[in-house]
Image 1 (cartoon, rainbow, N blue to C red):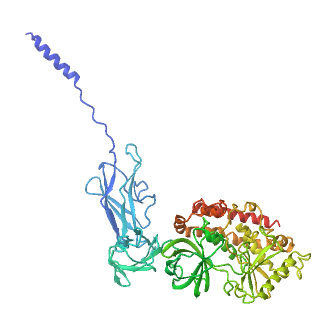
Image 2 (image 1 turned 90 degrees about the horizontal axis):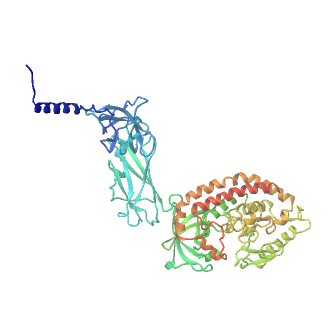
Image 3 (image 1 turned 120 degrees about the vertical axis):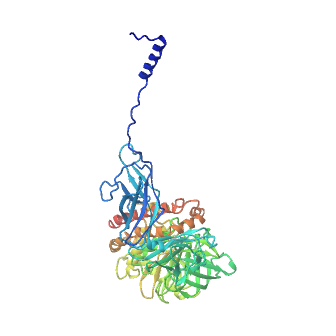
Length: 636
């Protein structure tokens, strides 16, 4: 029997076949490795007991991510690093990593190595990835803190806040330093403003009670005097005593000289003494000077007319200042035009390296005058007759060669030469003008005249009748070396050039004084570049005609060069030491204003430079000058 289908049935059959033909089962999805986007830990702080372990939980945001966490394997992909570095911690390490109870979680154990008892630092966990499809080459957690259990008990933060200490300009955070393998710590910081009183309230954080001299300290409440180191102690839960010595650098770290005039009046005269008081904060470098009476007046020639004033002091009694020998008379040099603030300091260091009998001792200080900070000054011994200064006794003389020619006892010697005068201007600085007798004046004038005649006489090299009968050769050579090395032209245009004589001795050159004008620079003395330039100053043109004087110059240079080679290193140390002082000083004073007293011309050539650039320039010139003198002197 035939099976006949109607047209309608054929239509349904065709549609069904078409549907089967067009419907396709999709391919299974391509398998990809899980993509790692981040990792994290469950703690912001981990405390490790001494010689013990501590744990934290590491979470990988893609649970299916596979990595090597075997800490003993060279292919381990997990590292612990100090935040901001590629360094692994020194005092502890990852001991083990084991899978957690949930997929994507790992228990990580940190082990104390026993290297140091106290530590506290920020670290990160790193998961190193390198296979394609994993995204970043290294993924890190947020930083977390790892501390030793003893550090937890101890002091972890220390500061002085302005709200509790109104005299401060701003809050001051101090740094806690740990000593290796000990329980001893130092807390250091700088208070960047002058405080007359260092009785301050500290704010600190600690795990256990804190004491000073057995008295419990309350953070934000207890007052201590930080003008000297203060020792805080903390007893840990294990019974170990931790010590924290707080050492505060006040202001710039330099000693502070505090002067108050009677009635707070300004010093307006170089001739008239004013009553005042002085005291010194030694800032733990020197003994403090309790308040005492002094007299004060201005000093200097050109420098007195600059905005930052130099001063002379006359104490009520002989007193030691900043470790220097006792005396009544002292000077505060302003060094106004010196962008390096170090010209005098370095020149005196050079002079102290020579055979010159005495060079003024000095210290850099901050000056507080009538309650106001005046900047960086040099406290220096004044040139005076004294067993600890120019030791010549009552029968001696101190002479200054001074082109200003404005001294009470002075004369012009025709023997020799200077730039501004036809001869050499001599002045007597000791005995004092109110004590010297006419006979003494006549005697020293006659001696200088005889010396001049011998220097310029036909037999000037004769050891018995020539200049060597009157002048000490070594001191005159060493004095000349200082001027040449410092590029000080004032030997030829004599101002602040000194000589002295004691009784029956010869005439000696020295001491050095006032080396801030044009020194360590070719600005004022371009003729000095690449050569000697003081061989014709005052008497030296004639002295250098003597073969023995030239030979002694070579001998002394070669004997002293090793010491001179060390001066740049001293300059570097002083530069760092005065950095904070320089910043404050030059916020108040502009050395370029000195051009107003020099016909509009810069004096040192570095007045517009920064402190750092000026010192670098000085250092370069000093090294170059040593090389020049080594070549030229040995060729004499």
